[in-house]
Image 1: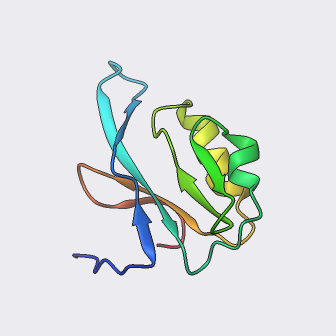
Image 2: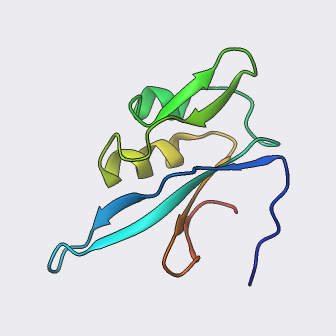
Length: 101
């Protein structure tokens, strides 16, 4: 199923490599922030400051470095979002790993 991109969804332009438990093969995924839902609480930036930054002008989160933290920190940041604005997708399959989508 192809997801229609809107100007309100800001996908991360870089994919980060996630290692699997067996053989440590790289499995890329992408991070998306729904700008319609993000209201700038900044919990993601507090949880994974190397990955997310709060844009002071727009008062919304943005991805600054998709490979700036390990998978657990990125997942914890997505889970910490009180409005569920962060979604994680498997780049190889396009399936949602976490989030409302």
